[in-house]
Length: 181
Image 1: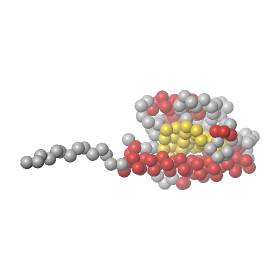
Image 2: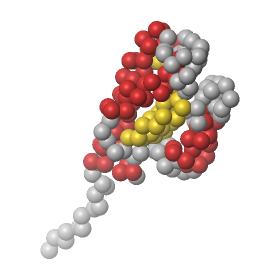
Image 3: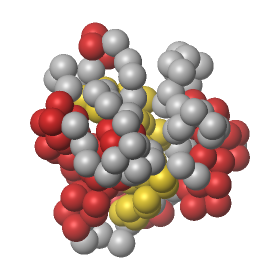
Image 4: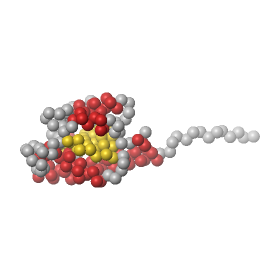
């Protein structure tokens, strides 16, 4: 049911490896944007499969991460915006070199959801540097506002959709037929 919408925004990456932490940096700047109990912001770091218990009840999951992908897949040249979990998603998206891949995590979430509707999406900024350090490169720093704005737009759209479905009138049952005497 729409009343049960639960949105999880998950920042992924290792903040000690420069641009790999862009998802977490975006999450930290984004989390105060939503004062809605239906939105949960999670610092997923490099947890990989360890995120399953936190995401299993979500109806919508938005991952924010550093992602290498062709420019043609990027929404505005800066940010990748891609639905996840369907068979068409074959990109080698990795949480980190040693953790479970994001595509695999998406498949596990879909499998655990069964027939329950689940929307999975990833927004990613291309990392320019994965050198040790807590600062983002200037290139990734320039992409950060685009990532944050796109994430906010997506979450607001999901909330509006849920609210409009909630307000939609239920199917009216037919009125009893009047007899004309």
